[in-house]
Length: 110
Image (cartoon, rainbow, N blue to C red; front, side, top):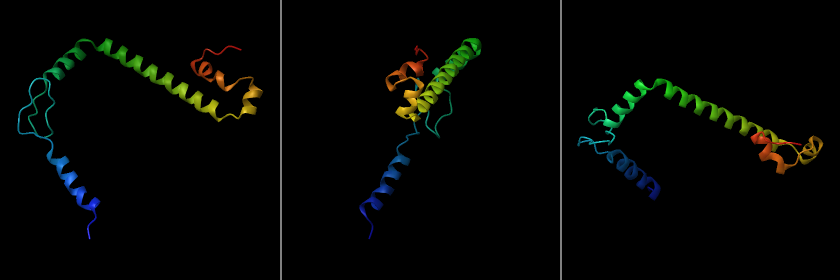
């Protein structure tokens, strides 16, 4: 005897598969469907032109993003390490849990 869950699953999956309408051509900045017209949207063409014209600006922006992510990764690693210490170990180091944000940001002073 099929359960409600087993009966509803094919209906939901069928609805998801049939939900993408691709008979009509995308207009303006709409993104084309998976099997629709492969014409590139205007905004994407403009973006590609900008990327070709401004490679150094794009590379600088990407370098900034990479540096920001590396810094966030370092901060997360520092936070994980500090969280792993016991209160006794923190006392031996001369720091308190309230000092963690300053230590993570690199602004801690004794």
